[in-house]
Image (cartoon, rainbow, N blue to C red; front, top):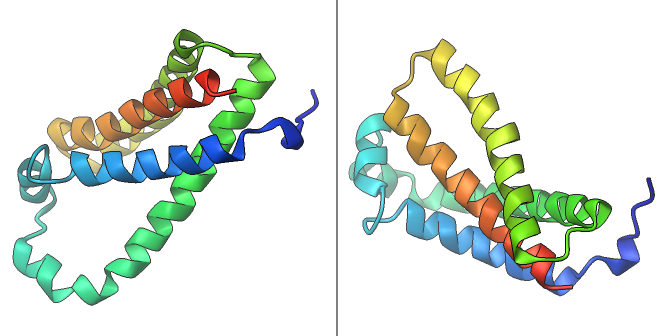
Length: 140
């Protein structure tokens, strides 16, 4: 196995990071799941307002995590030779379901957390991996 870092499309990686961040902003917005997510986590608008000066830390972590997942998926796509949207979609779904959803399933079960919260949080990851997989495999 040889990873060719020179053949990774770094522009696509940057676009993937932006897409992942935008998807997260949409996913956890009032247009999608903000209300149910806030209710299930106990986070209130007052809490968010009180801690708004600290959100830069959360966004910094989100950007770094997005960069790690997009870059890792780019490497997996390169190593498998995926070169079509369908291949990228399949790999993204395998990664999202196989790594994220399965890992969180155990955690959420042992923590007794609501299935609806699991579906909201894992849904974001699975959809994100799928979209990024399509992007990375298609944009060679």
